[in-house]
Image (tube, rainbow, N blue to C red):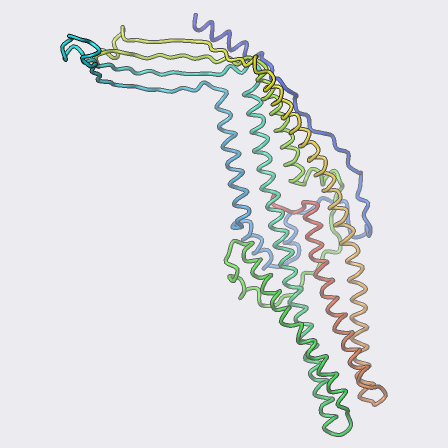
Length: 466
């Protein structure tokens, strides 16, 4: 009879339905192509993997590898993923009976007031028992299945969060590294110009000593030199700050990489074209979009969990054991105990609270749907902005390269005219000041271009270790 009952329950369970809405991924429309300017810079090819390796900078590659292995933000994200995975494994056990085992041995003595007139020896009693019990929630209305579905979505969102953290850490590392190299080039420009201006000061001082110069020329040359020298300490400080940040991003003490990073190196040559793909590819690649979509799936499953409380909960319980007053008889045939029971729990008088919880779950799902749609729009916006910014920075860099070449030639000609006596020293100072400013702006533009390249790869989630 027990077998028949269990078979009947299994058949009912197999045919039971899970209440609540079945999740379907929202269909978010995406444009067929990016409305990008300077389209000759971009191709429709798929984004390549490990884009930083394409830049041929061994130091950057080593730093990225170190960050992926030791960054503390990534370790935190990994621990959260491990927790979500563990909770998913725990929820899956709810599909099966919970089996426990126990045993007790007791030596009891009742007091004389409880049994008046009874000798002490007769008030002593021993008892022994051992049993194995099992309880099983019969998932007629899908509460357990929806719980597993929600935990699975949480675990998948956790994996996507880890990918988001990887993208963020690698992008920040690459951008800080490029800023460091740009600052080093700015420092080199400032020092080189300071050397030239120091030579100019020595020249006009010599002319003054020879009686052919003026004190005004000397003071103007000294003022320009000191102004240029004032740039150097600030640049050196920013270089140290960038080196500290890179060390922390790779899991090291702030000062750990100063020796390795203090040796100047040029900014990498940027690729002539960048594979951008299509917006549809972007929506499939971005881990933050996938994380938002998985959280929406989890919130939808939790509507089913709350809805299941509208229906009764059935629990099947069973026990088999043995009980005796003497340890020698514990496993005798007549000491056997057993039970099988079907329990029902139904909070039908608490329907107001149940419906309130369902309404709260509906609101959570609506919030997660809006968050998902917003994440998609922000991803498209971020990518469009990154494409336009990168294209415009290339144009800015080209103009500044021409301006720097012209400024260098102007400074050379001004010096020749001054040496030939057909121009005053003020023209030399103006030309050298303009040369310094243009060269500095060029280095800054090249740095912004490299940083914008990383931002573009970050926006399109290309080349990241997802």
